[in-house]
Length: 96
Image 1 (cartoon, rainbow, N blue to C red):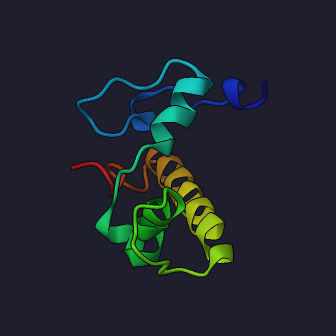
Image 2: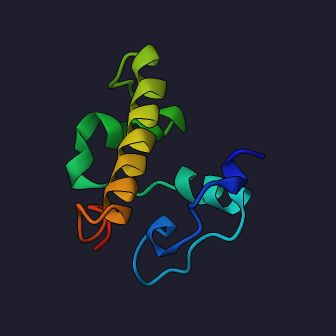
């Protein structure tokens, strides 16, 4: 599997500096599916998982925007991990 061959199982792949990184692609996907709000991601991206899970009394986002918000979050986290590996950032913004 292409994803399993990528350099993603280092400490930057974990949710924070205290957690161990995932060991498999499945663990990584499960971890990234957890609700982990980040103030830097903005309201749209932080609300999308709640709306998708049906936890809001009313839809805040347009239906088509929910999946885009989740994809944006994944892309942003991928970018931050890459920038950390390249030495451009000291750590991911979602780490405490």
